[in-house]
Image 1 (cartoon, rainbow, N blue to C red):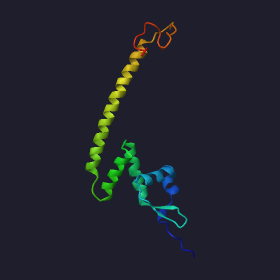
Image 2: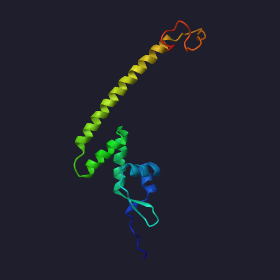
Image 3: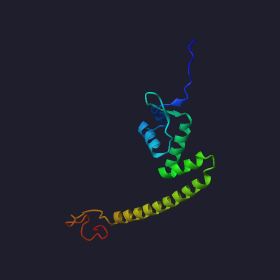
Image 4: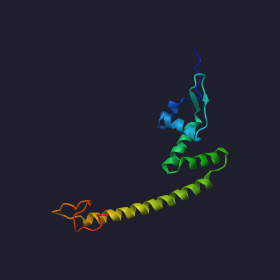
Amino acid sequence: MIAVRERTALRVGELARICGMSADAVRYYERSGLLAAPERTAAGYRLYPYSTIERVRFIQGCQRLGLRLNEIVDLLQVRDTGECPCEPAGVLLRRRLDELDREIARLNALRADLRTMVKRLPDVDCPDPLPGTWCPPGNEGGDS
């Protein structure tokens, strides 16, 4: 009977496929300090421990929340000490909420500006615009 050796590590392509990302993204995570440099085979192939799957999924979740890679590195450093990363995560998430609130306000102002411009467009018989403008004469707000 042939003994089957249980695999204890994943190659970069396998990890990427399991996590739904490209192998280049996994390598980028490694270069960015999000993932520790893995062991390598004699042929130079990266061998990631299975625990890397959970780490990559944590990173992906942080990215979905809009955290930047350097912020994720900071959270992972706290997490790797065995301490709860809740306090630093709370600070980062509250900061992200403030950023989102500012962006939503900016987008709402943009929406209002666009609605105003649409209301000012003539309904019928639109005359040709003057040279250097995009609105016909008499329509304020669209020439600048």
